[in-house]
Image (cartoon, rainbow, N blue to C red; front, side):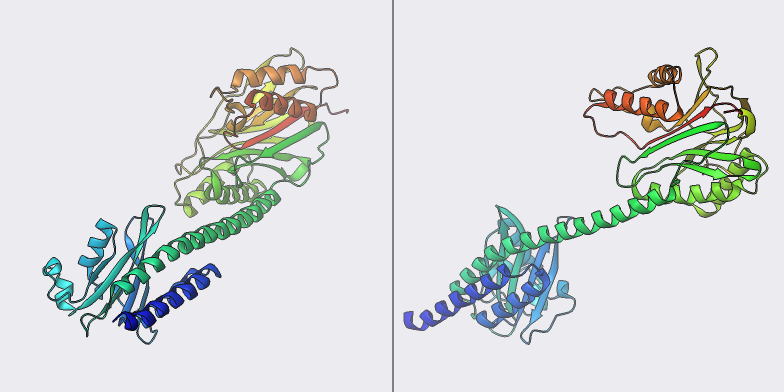
Length: 426
């Protein structure tokens, strides 16, 4: 008997050697597992083989189901003894039965009787003390075909394949992460392309702008829209959500505002028309706050606020700063958009700062907000400094926010537009 088993043991060792080489030479998990299962069926004399892995939901799912002729089996969930699988899952130990029809441990197993299962061998796949799956082979025609050597072979295979499975999973995660990072980088570049490529020159005005995303994709945006008669539309907006969905919504909102600006008679009509179109097309539940102002010759501005942060108007004559009033509500909520265009008249040296809450609500490591009052104080000081420009005011705000935040991660997207009126004779 010992001499008869020696060739079998040698064959098992050779099989394990080839299996180990194969699973360590490739990270294509499906191909590896199919080949491994075919070899195990061949050596053990099993009629069929199945491999199940635990999914993200914690449940075992079939990954391989093979027959004697290396064909894939359909509906594997109806082909195995779930009683056997459950016992192995609970005990996390190999299980061998050479005649399941008469094995008292499983005489209540309906699938064993219904499928006429006889020889069954099932072993857990363990990785660092955690069961990640099972290997199951059986034979419906013969009893007693599996030996303890077969059980040991399958247990050794399961140990080797467990490491390979985890390596392949990590590889897939790394590949997917790399792919997503490349796609997000491309999307980030596309989004950057939607922002103005350069600051326009408008007689009597200085403009400066800054846009920074907290993630790869942002919901904030700003825009400069050339209008007839030398006027310029200035938009600062903030989508309610973050990430990719917010970026897509941002692109839609930007296009609709820009498209309607050229046709509408007033800024409030521009936003109302954009709001109608957003509601017609969008079912996401997101909304966008917008501040839209039209720069006219001579320092006259036509401003409309749709639920956005209150712009800061710094008066050169007095050095005082005031927050312009809020008006209406965000686009994308209701068909009725109660917004109103309000005119203001800038004097030479006056500064208007438009921003999103990523500026005023930037948090430091202690969780404190930068705050509207601190922002207004920075604007007041920067706007009143000798030789102040729109660019110098914007730079002062950015430096103050950066100093305040310190090493804290970005709280939100950060968008700034500074308008400075220099006078019609400048």
